Length: 136
Picture 1 (spheres, rainbow, N blue to C red):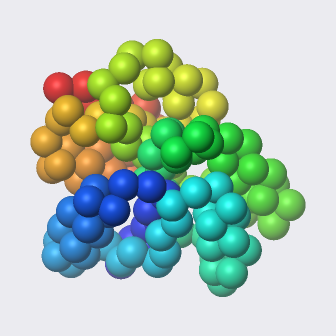
Picture 2 (cartoon, rainbow, N blue to C red):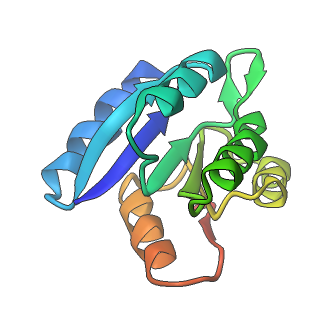
Picture 3 (cartoon, rainbow, N blue to C red):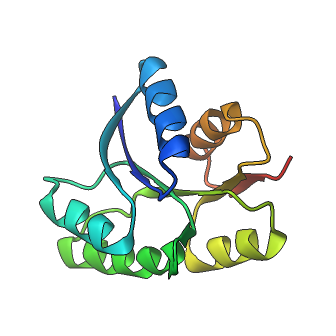
């Protein structure tokens, strides 16, 4: 099983994505957070970081992308690999996609795309070292 954390402040999106991914039989949702403070707390309390983090860049007034450098620091301190970071944005904005990839995200999917693009992106990234993003 591949462990996933969802960092997203849209309950509807979380309610759609989590059950759908778990129903695939390959993924377990190890935790969720709706803001940066909850995300930090989640990563402090987990025994190990998940293999994949699905991150929304707009967490209310907070920038979810600010979490990426913090994750890099946590991983450097623990001498562990950085999880695969998939940015899932509700905005189909090329600037946000660019910012996410510059911050260190591995891949981006916009909500304008089909929810199945999340699975395709996870699997494409999991088995590849090239960034993949969908802006359907």
